[in-house]
Amino acid sequence: MIYLLEDDESIRNFVEYALNNTGLESEGFEKPSDFWRSVDKKIPELVILDVMLPEEDGLEVLKKLRNRADTRKVPVIMLTAKSSEYDKVIGLDSGADDYVSKPFGMMELISRIKALMRRAGDDAKKDEYMVGGLYVCPSKHIVKANGKDVVLTYKEFELLCLLISNRGIVFNRDQILQRIWGFEFDGENRTVDVHVRTLRTKLGECGSLIETVRGIGYKIGG
Image 1: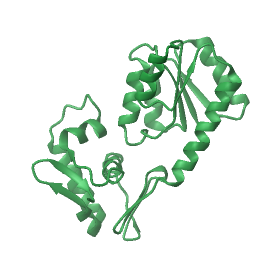
Image 2: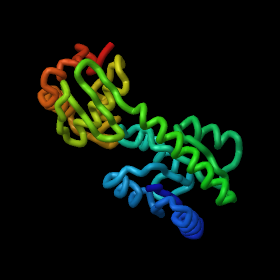
Image 3: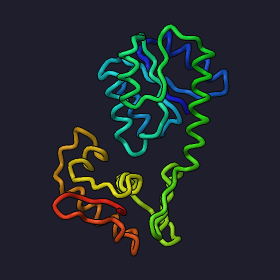
Image 4: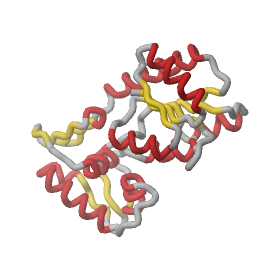
């Protein structure tokens, strides 16, 4: 499923129609709020993102996508009327995978989409981690501890993915709150400790792989 966040109805309908007729299932959104509701229900395979949007601009949406464990690797194509080299650099440096300026050719856009999806498919095959007896495959939402399946809540899974995909890196509690719960989370740091404790319990012997770095935070591996 491809998500298109574009407030111009004519462009949104045109791109949706072209993608669906090419065999690429897509869904368009006028506002970021509608887009985020769908993301929470189903993670897209690729996002086409306009820059100038109501509610929040496309670069802010992109930043949030890259800060979420479940969407950080979703390919993103920026679709915008801005065409200067500076604007492209800002978009790409912010985490976009490609940049298409309006007006654009539909066949070129489809070609770029297919290229990014092929690349993402190849990357997904490598998207698995093994540390000691702990195995995690984020793309398939699989966690095994010493060969046994482990069932985690959404936030526990996000936390585990954050730590294991950044092996050896220490995350303090504020960083974890920001990455997993978002910028607007206003709870206490105790939330992180509680989730780490339950995560360790569910992982059994493998729970010891989540190390406490005294006075700083948590990490997996060194």
